Amino acid sequence: MDVLKRIAVHAGGVARRTPFGRGRPGAARALEHLGHVQVDTISVVARAHDHILASRVPGYRSAHLQQLIARREAFEYWAHAAAFLPMTDFRHALPRMQRLAAGGRHWARADRREMERVLDRIRAEGPLRARDFAAPAGHRGGWWEWKPAKRALERLFQEGRLMVTAREGFEKRFDLTERVLPSWVDTRVPDLAEHAAWLVARARRHLGVFTARHARYQRHETGLGKAVDRALADAVEAGEVLQVAHPKLTGNPRWFVDADAIAACGAPISRRPQALSPFDPLVIHRDRLGALFEFDYQIECYLPAGKRRFGYFSLPLLAGTRFIGRADCKAERKQRVLTCRHLALEPAAAASDVEAIRRGLVDLAHMNDCAQIDVIRVSGTDARRAGQTARKLSGPV
Image (tube, rainbow, N blue to C red; front, top):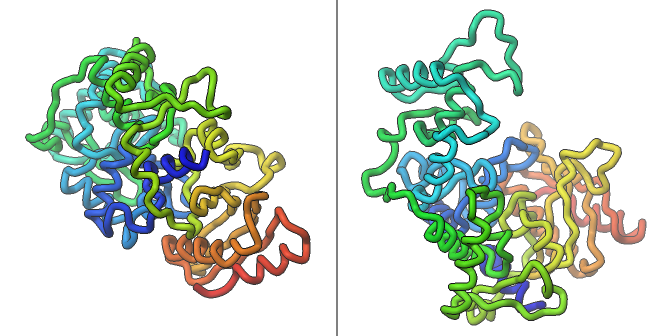
């Protein structure tokens, strides 16, 4: 199992401190490798897309991702959720866009006449935000009470008629796709077999160890399940993918490993702990996380407070190939303090890991522009050691 863990960590891009380079070029390479970084609204620490890239790219800043959008090296659309994706993968967003443009069901529903009015304004005035459109008289607003123009913008975006040119704060600015999409982008719609083969190749690259379900995660094109199965069978026949033979990964579903990753997994792995985003590609498949790493993880921000065991936004702590705990953190940005409200240590954590965890929390503090760490509570050890650990981990960075 240790070999499979090593493959997964290397494929996930978190085995070394600088796997993709630094700054904006490193962010571009990391995005290309991962295939997407998930957008999320929660900002108790760095938002998911920034956190995922900062975990792999030293010197990364949020502005770098916006620069990739401005340079047309990345675009915003839907992967398994809202995400930033490399522009080279644009054509594989087309099947979903076409399905929705043909009337496919989606939460973003809008009046077609309103959609045409919105398009006319953007065509005439250039990129616009939702706030640039007035709400009708008597409209109350609210998260689930979008004004007609905002619903139209989102539907046009989902159908591929509009693209996001920038985010200002967290608000999207939209323009016509034909004015945003670079001329070099391949816009031929892939057939089902080609799309499935691409999904398998992407899973090989950024997961390393996976099942068919992981490869097609949250994609719902008709017939895609069987097409991915065929693509995997072709990859096995070609020697590109091997079926995993391990007691903990046998049965249904079948598990696969990227053949090229087996030789590469012998490279050294950094033991410095990292506090990963709950939406990090390494941990987003919870069943895979449990099977490979024996780490039972759930994000608890969607649970009522009384049902939370570890905290509102606990971050998985990875050290090498071990998950040694989770840290419920919040960046108090005005005070420049990273507060760890609950550090829950796993049985895999050793007393010698404490200093390493401190370095991982320092990295997280720097990511969030914090100058101080305050650890409030530690669990997973006896009371005396818990107090000592909290004191060791707290302090200026």
